[in-house]
Length: 254
Image 1 (cartoon, rainbow, N blue to C red):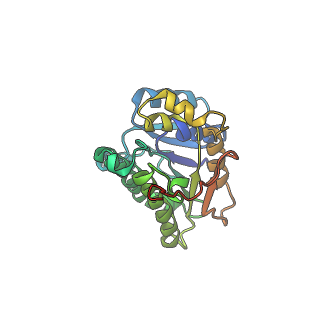
Image 2 (cartoon, one colour):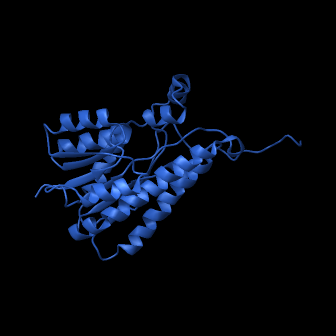
Image 3 (cartoon, helix red, strand yellow):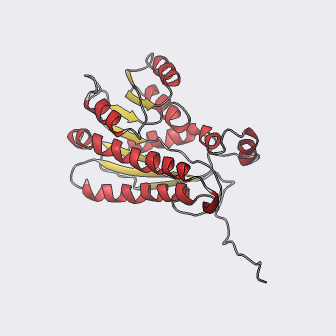
């Protein structure tokens, strides 16, 4: 029987690359995205390789998520894999200068959207049992603070702890839970973070040889295709060019 994977945020970046990788392997796809034209085009393209069901919605919309998951069509109702990819960062300002609206959007998307999707699909994943997987896309920002990470880093710390807690609750069900934590990655994610500022985007990656969405997609595919008795708890990835910054010190009083 062909396996089905449910991928949120599939219209760009990691989500789009992951959808393509699983389509190549013949998995059936349930893809979500807010941008209808992009999602329709991706579904049309990948339907030449596998069966695809697109859901135009925002993961922050609990009612829409409830309705969409409750009414998955025949052939897509049995879910083996969930990739909680939908998420975003907005801005790199210090906390005292940030927009409270941006903070709320990050919390609603990165925490509540992931929470809704996971809880609504848990019965289907548990019904699948052995070999089913939940893959949450966290970030190194959930482990290492840096100036401007504030609420974004806090949301990704939630993803990491939530993933560990799910593992405890799902013991005995056969459902696996993994959290991947990428470092510097080149994708539309950063363009959104910088409010569409192409110069800031280009400067972020100049000479760094960052991770690409295809690298993350390959990692996700590898994790979900491990033998059923293996759980990858967490996996942190950085480009070789990136490491941990030293502790910062304010010397203005010196």
